[in-house]
Image (cartoon, rainbow, N blue to C red; front, side, top):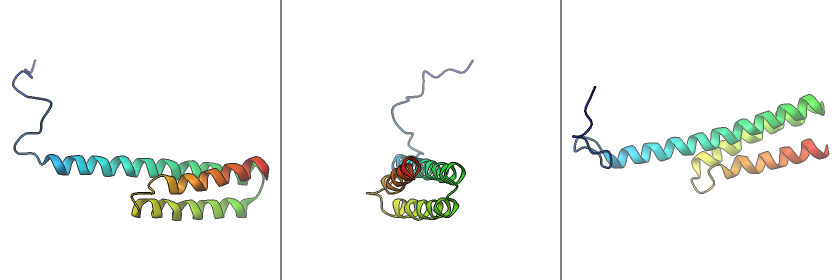
Length: 97
């Protein structure tokens, strides 16, 4: 069995670049948040197309959610909020169409 008594788990080693690791992790988490919100938009768009049979609205929802995801990726202040706004509109359309 390997001994872990010699390694500290709280700090990066001198050969590691801690700032780069943290920046990469923050970028990955941001990407996952945005991508998850865009996929939720796609699911809502498919529900609008399948349940309400409004396929043009569904296609528009997919396109707009992709654009909102790109805007969220390029504007760090918006992040996942840009596609979340589209998701709210799509949920409203699904409920009240």
